[in-house]
Length: 234
Ligand code: ADP
Ligand code: MG
Image (tube, rainbow, N blue to C red; front, side, top):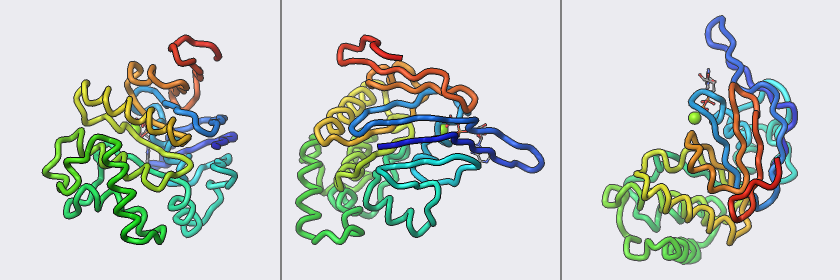
């Protein structure tokens, strides 16, 4: 589903160069739930932005769902994202004037989905996430955990091929973090959606079947675990 070849990203700050990603090679299969871990500044967000085509690489290629995103124009990327990708943000990024249902239904507007169908799909997924009694609440009327469930429902509603999440539980307490993580893994598996999540928390990453560790812009560890959490491949 995702293929990264010889990916390098160098930022220029004044006269200095920051090598955010050195030479990344990586493949992620369809339906895989994958965590990218590393300390602050290791290059996690840079890698996620590259996978999602949000920034152009200095060198190398990124292929997602058979298309080379690293070579697309902004216009091509916008269409590609609409049809293939979902995003979950640490800060939820919900529209403050819209209700939970309206926020979740929003991405479907751009896909040309009929209003009634949009509403039905948004309600169904919110129910699935135990948000059935909060459908018509605005973001300020919801807790952090509830707001993030709306954010998650919005990412999943269009059943994209891949969902990217940058520290999706970063603003939540530990109990809510656990619930949100379990929900993410469950809904990804049910829908066979490829999920790529960045976290600085190695404990949280342990729940995932695939854990990619980066240090100073290099992958230093890439492990796959089976359901029991035993390491079976490196
Ligand atoms: P992480 O998400 O793991 O905390 P980042 O990917 O955000 O790390 O950053 C990796 C490195 O690249 C850091 O040294 C950071 O300062 C640098 N960096 C990230 N984005 C930019 C940018 N837009 N301009 C210059 N340097 C950047
Ligand atoms: Mg980051």
